[in-house]
Image 1 (spheres, one colour):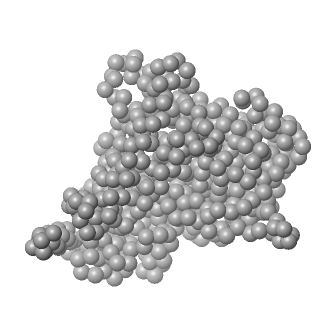
Image 2 (cartoon, helix red, strand yellow; image 1 turned 135 degrees about the horizontal axis):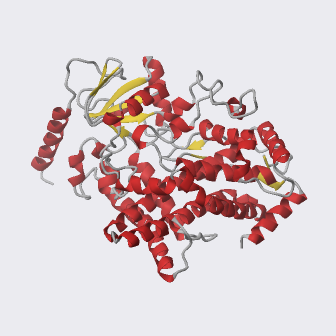
Image 3 (cartoon, helix red, strand yellow; image 1 turned 30 degrees about the horizontal axis):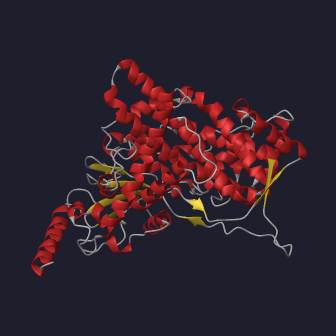
Length: 510
């Protein structure tokens, strides 16, 4: 390329950054690490375990709200539940939008997902809420029970592949609910599609990683241009999102046309469209189903693998859960949803698992549609609002010994769930008008899986050939949905009766 053209592009970028510089007027911005001219905090923005860096900066600055600037883009980090609730809940009219997300929405094709859309586009969210309010979500509980029992049988037959079985369980639940389709044991195309798409989404959405978020004009740079590797990545990643959106939906429609479909979100929604004649909304059904698919798969895997890791580290908690289940559930039977109120410690284990190593440490960022003033600080219009959920759930003033796994923190003196202890759900599933509409279904599927595993399995650390206990590293792989680094474990039936229960129930569901 001619040097004059390169110089012109550089000048355009500098002019763009100058025009986007924040105005200096009546109220100061929240505290911030030192910023450089034009580029702000660009050079020090973390690209991995960002939540820990943000928490460190907040502590150094003595503030639970800080301001960052990346090449002209305003980023506000909310490091406490109090700040997030006051801004995202009480000021929700201003802070309920989503960032433009040039990389993800405009280059990678994720503009179909209502979780990433601008706030005003609510048709898909409404469609989802019609099918998944607490009472409506109960109709999918038999499916959750069935695939959970099949999962237990897979663990019994091949416990070393427990990670594979957890992924199969997560995909079976959401594909059954969203599309009414079954999942193959190995090399399932739907699971492969989801894993590729979600991995690329996590990479593409990370705040501050791609300069095109701060300088959207860069999206027009050709792929061959020096420094345009993000365009080549986006092209490949867009293919994954398309496959994930179209493949299972086509399979569901085929089964519906053949009269072999199981009840699902897709079948219910298409039936309503047929009744009303509003076939023009079919694309919304497809996009909403795909949003469900992406929202549930990796999060379920993360929580269940963390649960297994937590049981390895906390045998006392596992023992107490075994005793509670044995005292409540009739011998020879599995726990059911009707037992949930009588199994508060099991519920506490699920809550503590979700708090201890939360799935999405930074959640999905919000965006401000207009300027706001909070605690005397100015929140510029267009700011990316980042809730540091990890910091909120590891606040020692709310959760003493926050890095320890202690389910009993949620149990009151009466032996029931203590409502005085802040439920991690209040942060985990988002804030304000963008709270996750699938949270009821998500918790129920996690609860039945955890209760069922505890009912029939002992989860212990393996022993090497020299008789030494093999300790897991307890390390995590950072992503949009964080998962534990690979670790070994032993999953063994608690008794001969437990093994027979698993085999008997699996045969009933065949």
